[in-house]
Length: 120
Image: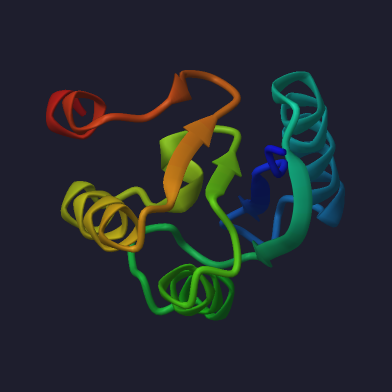
């Protein structure tokens, strides 16, 4: 018997000029992706009107804590830039999640590998 993989969704927008609808649209897109991939969404994380240039965001911090605690098997976001705009932070997120055996997938690029991280 195989168990279905558990997915967490992460969404973010960076300025007060954008609306909460941006988060809703990202989450809907990620839920659709999860359904196509046969993943069960168990948690959603979001940061509203917070720059992606730093990891000092409550949503990404909780996602990373829960990832270390094996709360899910895969993180889904619209794109890597939703997780962070800083390439060294992306590498840090990737390494921490990989150590916890949590994968990253994006709606834009599918499954993310070390090659994706290196080429960005």
